[in-house]
Image (cartoon, rainbow, N blue to C red; front, side, top):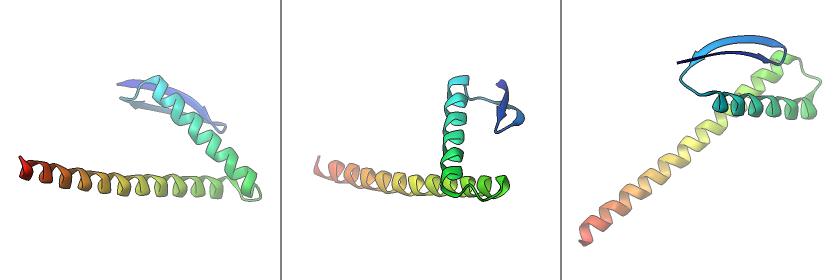
Length: 87
């Protein structure tokens, strides 16, 4: 397990994870870019509201991706079943 100390949006964050530093760097970059995009679109909101909107947006993206993955897994299972029946 790795330990990290990051400064994200002016906040010092300390945590431990199994993710390597490249993965953490990508996540931090993604987060900060998404936050900047929100500021550009609705900078009149306070930081807490922007962070809440960011979290909700990322959660929605995750749920949509999970739904798509579930659909792909179902289609693959159906194709596998069809292949097994034709053998």
